[in-house]
Amino acid sequence: MNDKVVQNALASAINCGVCARPLVYATESITKTCALCGKEEKTLIYCPAGHYVCDSCHSKAALEVLRQVLASSKTTDPASILEQVMSHPSVPMHGPEHHSIVPAAIVAAVRNSGYPLPEGAVEKALERASKVPGGWCGLYGDCGAAVGAGIAISVITGATPLTGKPRTLAMAATSQALSRMLDEQPRCCKRASRIAIQSTVEFLRERLGINLLQADKVRCTYSLRNHECARIQCPYYDEVFPEKPE
Ligand SMILES: [Zn+2]
Ligand SMILES: [Zn+2]
Image (cartoon, rainbow, N blue to C red; front, side, top):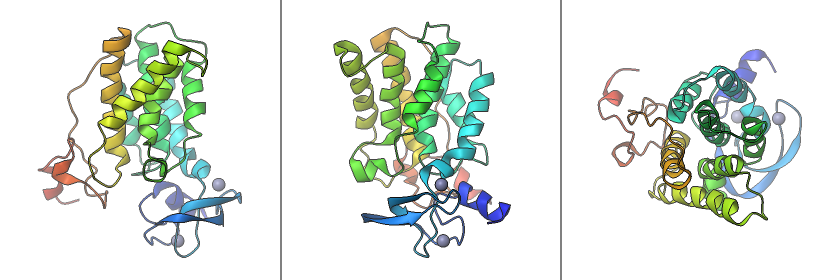
């Protein structure tokens, strides 16, 4: 595969990055070989013409951008980290990269606030989030960005399955974020990530006494790129923006 094809494959999450056909979101899994790394795996999301890129290859470029931003960021506003990372051309419109961006942005903002965190906290959040696959919301009933809220609280509080209170807090953070996403709309990874971060900033303040910066609500600039945009049903939709030429 040439570089252009690889780049397209990584950048697209709406249509196939190789042939631009709309992706199939199936309910029966099928075995596919990743066009980039050759790994064979079962999947529910693939191109009808047979092209397939695994979650790990799909997320690679975006995660590199995320790591660069996290290494230099000094802000205590996780929403601004989220917007900065999402605006990079290597980050697709939708996809499991968002599952990593949410907890990493939150944990980095808490780190930047000076709150004492366990050793390697940001790295831990990234490692755990990388295991949450794409399409988790509709296929398993829990949005990966909401899981990201739980991962962040788990890392910050040092939760394990055996710790009563921290474990409960981690699940409560996921539950609160998820409960704010029940909008009867198709998935939008931008909307879900913004909701998860906003919910977690409130959660950190109310339940853990950690005060992060809470920026003004963003006006979305992704509506034209999102075929399933919820438009006026989305709290971030900018009614003026889609009228402008692309
Ligand atoms: Zn294709
Ligand atoms: Zn791969």
